[in-house]
Length: 68
Image 1 (spheres, rainbow, N blue to C red):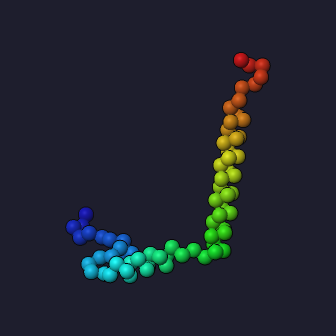
Image 2: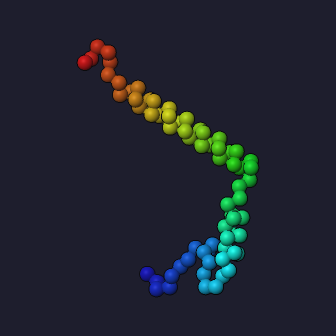
Image 3: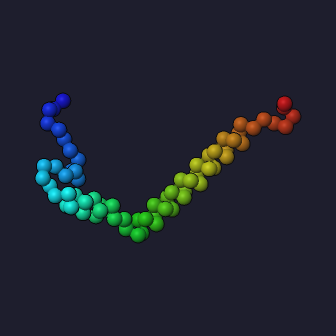
């Protein structure tokens, strides 16, 4: 292990103005509207897939009617 600490690239270190770090973080978080739509579609698809898996597992673990 080195004794010299390491910092993330976007972290303000030794006198870097905080406003520059805030501006850099804000520009990195900006999402293209087309990409945002794709992310929403992917999220919906994951949700539907998860629900389908849960339903399949619940169905597979049912007991038959004649078995008590």
